[in-house]
Image (cartoon, rainbow, N blue to C red; front, side):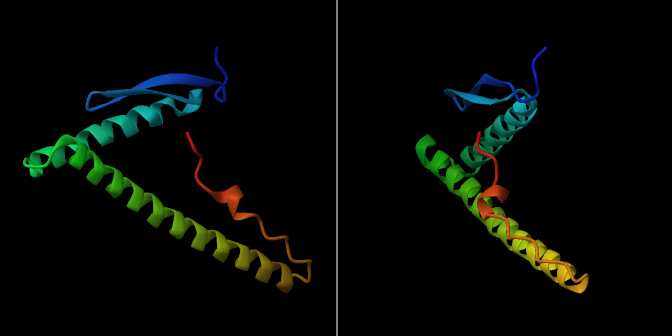
Amino acid sequence: MKSKETKINIEVNIYGTRFSVAVPFSQQDSVRETESEMKTYLKRLRDTHSRKSLPECMAMMAYHYASEYFALKALHEAEASEAEDLLRDTAQMLGEDSPEPQDSKDWEFEDY
């Protein structure tokens, strides 16, 4: 049996474009869900923008997901900063040394 952290290669197919990704075994369902959501979104773009070419629709989809990613990343960084402030304030109220701030790189989204 495979460990949840053992990496496996999964073939992904987005509108006829196939590629392989190496992901932890525990993430394979997430990869399939992402693949399905992207197919659905691309189909909706193709239906809505029938005069746009496939590369144009794929660029629109890439922009859509990239803008969502950066919005979530900014929100995540703001919340991480607020959590650090709360930890520091709590430590001060308890008369303890303030915890060292964590490097924001430790809080970023996991790459596949």
